[in-house]
Image 1 (tube, rainbow, N blue to C red):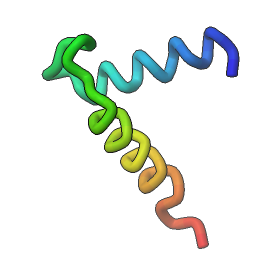
Image 2: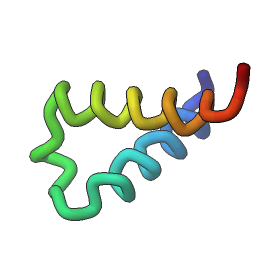
Image 3: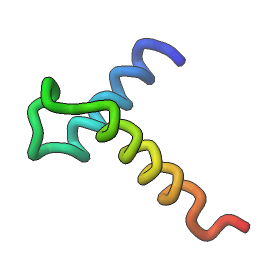
Length: 46
């Protein structure tokens, strides 16, 4: 993963949790976001 990819992913997480300050994000928030991405990405693929 490049720095550019990392920065893009961080922007996506911050946009997803736009009601929180970045300092308020916890490991649980990040795990929840990853599960959301997995479900969204794999939806409809069999």
